[in-house]
Image 1 (spheres, rainbow, N blue to C red):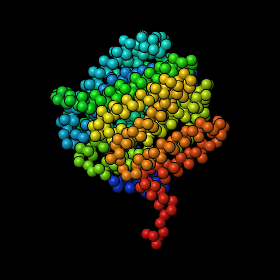
Image 2 (image 1 turned 90 degrees about the vertical axis):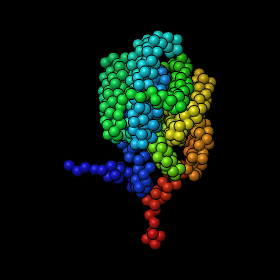
Image 3 (image 1 turned 120 degrees about the vertical axis):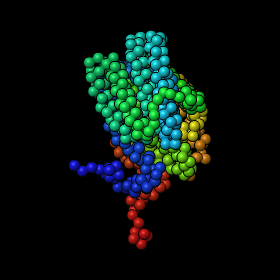
Image 4 (image 1 turned 180 degrees about the vertical axis):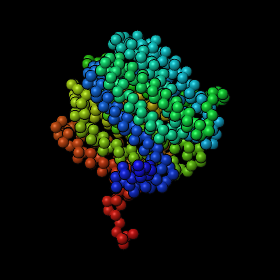
Amino acid sequence: MPTFTLKQTLDCFTPAFLRGYRQRLDSSHVGSRLVHGAFWSLMATVFARSLGLLSSIIVARLLGKQGYGQLGIIQSTVEMFGIVGGFSMGITATKHVAELRKNDPSRAGRIISLCSLVSWVTGAIMAVALALLAPWLATRTLNAPHLMPLLRIGSLLLLLAAINGAQVGVLAGFEAFRVRARITLIAGIINFPLMVAGVYFAGILGAAWALVASAAANCLLNFFALRNEARVARISLTYKGWYKERSLLWSFSAPAVLSGIVYAPIVWTANVLLVNQSQGYGQMGVYNAARQWQNALLLLPNIFASVALPVFSSSIASGGTTQDYQKTFRISHSVAVVVTFPLCAALMFSGEWLLRMYGKGFSEGVPVIIGVLLAALMQCIGVTSGPAIQAKGKMWIGLGYNLGWGCLYLAGSALLVGRFGAAALAFSAAFAYAVNAIWLFWYIREDLPPGFLARANKALLTALLLSVTALALPATLRLVMAVPATLVSGFIAVFALADPGWRESVRKRIHPPTNAAR
């Protein structure tokens, strides 16, 4: 049976007009690490997310708009408590394991032990807090006393999520992307039948237990993978001496946690404002459905961001050049915009059809899905700036970013939710991401590749025009325009928004130089 190398596999899947650019990436040490890491993550995550999208559609049809909205607010509540529960051990592990695994393996082992211990302790504390506060939260804030048992089940999910976050962070620090891809694939396969069967036989209660079971399986897979990677790297995993690294909790983890503390409660507060409106849980159901497509759209940008952090960190630790730093930034951003903009256009202009798949009443939320996808585009434009700041240890700047975003988002949501429902949350998030992207790029302008700011501004304007066009068109014409909008967005992304090296590769493929020119 024939076997294929990664290079041969990439050649098969890369379009001919982009193959030249990919070969340039392969010839670069930084580009090769980014592409190979992203490839393994992408292959498995696409399959797992596809199963997740399919299961979300089935679950929404079985639960209905109200039930799906209730499941969404439970997940949002767990995420809010989980920010403190995880204590940002994932990011802490990724940055420092990537920096130290070769230069100082004993210290890398101590940091892994620190991250493991802290995630267990803080995760358990916040899980108990959620279980104790469940009656008050269900009755006083969510206006749904019957959700109290689901919140208590969610406390188990919170603990497992905290542990899983630290484990995934360590694996990312090892740049074990192929291993992570395998685990993501297996976890996705496990989650699908559990969710569908859980909802079919036990409704929303079954969905909650299915999420817990899936998270437990994921933690177990990560546990064995992490120990194998540590053995290969000759890093000893022991809790002896972990307290020597406790200073990291203040210098790096604390501002990261505070950033999450700012972000998660604000998101949760906006969701609570929504569910307390007339037909609020139905609106939350539509918003939850739209968010599934936002997550799908951000799949590749987030993968490249997760790969970029250890590449940034190891490059800085090994005395890498500014050129390497800028190349990582440039490649990640170019791939994100070239993939995301045409895909977003296809989803925006097909929004009504997408929501109809979720069942009766969902299709009225077309403005919601357009706003959510616009927010995803704004996130995509600035997706690489987060890892760039984290790799340099500027976590307090990250806290300021999240605080600014949260103030804008919550203010817009509070002012507009009564009139526009879930659409207020979607467009407030988009506006907040756009303002913060402009501010963040200005702050790190000296680290940016030449010409990047101009391309970022063009990307922000293109995203705005795309969403306005989709909103202005009537439903029938909007679907007809899906293909032209996708093609135009793809052309603009390649020739106006991406790295000039990418554009040059495309031009050469479309118009090869003559023999005389060669």
